Image 1 (cartoon, helix red, strand yellow):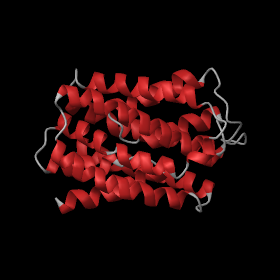
Image 2: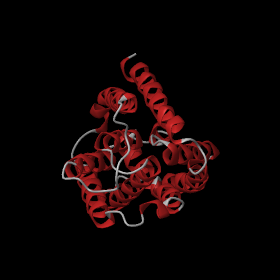
Image 3: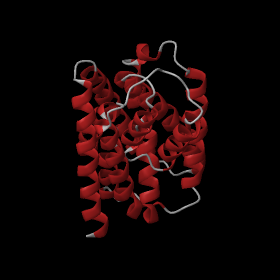
Length: 242
């Protein structure tokens, strides 16, 4: 059980910085003998306190932003994604994970190399609705690498400054994860003993990660996200295809 706590602490820090904490907690839950669908649901529910603590440290970055639109997107997308997981076997989704991670990481890296940059005004453009709704749906359905995906989408949209994009990422992740609590609880997929233990680690890790975000250089962090996503995709190519 201490091992689960340790992995969730690391996952909370990673979620606050870049996203992808589920890729640390999911293998730990699978190693504990929990079925894959239950492991995804348990890890998703447990991540919510970490997102709350991380977003709380960044909340001032979204003052004057489109909070109502983001709230609707996060809750609707996360809830629909969680419902979709209850209808399908998570094992079949494993083979898509490394491709998704690699794709969003390369997309984000391409945006960083663009002369147009990846920052802009904090506005809800029409194209942001389907893009962020799709990202939130993915967060509710699986969630691994959600932060990388959301950062890539907002970079393409040039929605807000780098730190504002991180705040949006955490806010949408918090809402999508919160929506899964309701859906997965009703479905009976959550292993609550393990979920509560993981939640403690996520909470502490998220608080620490939010503090790091305030002093790290935005562009350095952005390239760190790309490297993190590519490394994760390589690991899961070996794990699922090896």
